[in-house]
Each structure stands twice: as structure tokens, then as C-alpha cells.
Amino acid sequence: DAGITQSPRHKVTETGTPVTLRCHQTENHRYMYWYRQDPGHGLRLIHYSYGVKDTDKGEVSDGYSVSRSKTEDFLLTLESATSSQTSVYFCAISESTDRYTFGSGTRLTVV
Amino acid sequence: GEDVEQSLFLSVREGDSSVINCTYTDSSSTYLYWYKQEPGAGLQLLTYIFSNMDMKQDQRLTVLLNKKDKHLSLRIADTQTGDSAIYFCAETENEKLTFGTGTRLTIIP
Image 1: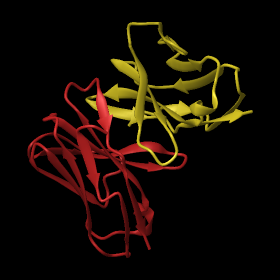
Image 2: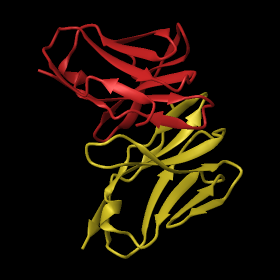
Image 3: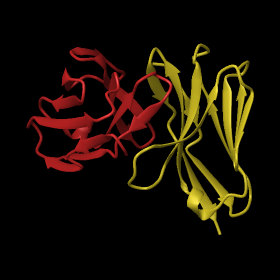
Image 4: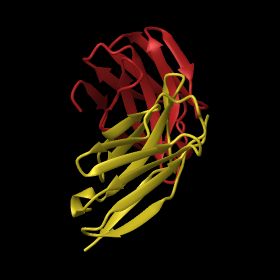
């Protein structure tokens, strides 16, 4: 999607290892979000940010932390990955909270 | 978070109309959205409706909003094979999007 990129696109990691996913935007949007997508659950909000160094928890934040030291980057960290965190992770950006743009997703597998 | 509910599956014959339904709980939502997700892809915004509207039409897509019953629907006219996807409804709440579980639309030739 134009203006928002996620990296990596795919990752396989071992249980207990730390993992960081990156979301990068070139739109200078204020709001950034991390969601996870699981069958039967749709997309659920993990954490979100409403400005540099301003973040808050979403619905499923346990086991995840985030950081936003620059407007353009929003990092999602799994401190110690578990198999239940195997999922597809989507980042989204928004300026006015009525239009959201989503990244292409990161498929994470924890073995 | 607020619950947004959808049926998980819908099968429709090619050329027929598809109707995907959604119920939501947050009556203060300003906008309600429909997103489409094709296999292996991200989410594409299909359409959205402002909460003070009852209906919005955009080519083959018609969105109906019943605020009293907190019911949102998406009608796709003349359904084509390219419409096969998962469709998510979503509502805004406190600057955040809350999604339904998604409805997988399958087209029968």
C-alpha cells in the first residue's frame, strides 16, 4: 500500500526469542496501529499510537510492547515469542481517524 | 472493546446479489466501514458510511445502515468471481477501528 510498508513480510522464529516488527510510513500521519488477524476473530487491536512517544494498549496487548520514537516508525516487539502469537500482523495509519490505510501484513510463525 | 458480529461464510451464485450483514454495539460510532481482503493480501477499503446516513450507493455496492437496530449491510449486485474475498465491517470508537470477524464470500459458477 502506498505510503506504508511493513517489514519483514514473513518471519519464522523459535519460542522464547524476541521479535520486532517494523511499520514505516511516509505520509506523516499522526495515528499508527498494530492489529493481529486470526481466523474467526477478524482483526484485533494490539497497540496504537497517537503521536511520538504516545502509545496505548488495545484489546490484546499482553505479551507485546511498542515504541514510536519517530513519526514515521512504529515498532511492535514480542519480548518472548509464544506459539499463540503465530498470526498475521497488520499495521495501519490514519490522520483524521476517519480514513485508515493498511500495510500488506507480516506473517509470523512461532515454532 | 465493542463487539461487531458477522456471519463467517456466504455462498452466492455468479450474477446474483450478495448481502453481507453486520451488527455492532457502539451507537456513538461516527463512521462504519466495509473492507475487502483478497487471499494473501492486506485490507482494501471498499466503502464507508457516515452515521447520519441510511444508505450509500457506489456502483455495484449498496450500504444500508439501520441505527435503531445497529445493523449494517453490504449488497454487491451482479456478483462476479473477482468478488471472492473476506469482507470485514468495522466501526470507529475513540479513534480506533473495531472489526467484525469477517465474512468469507464464495462465488458459485
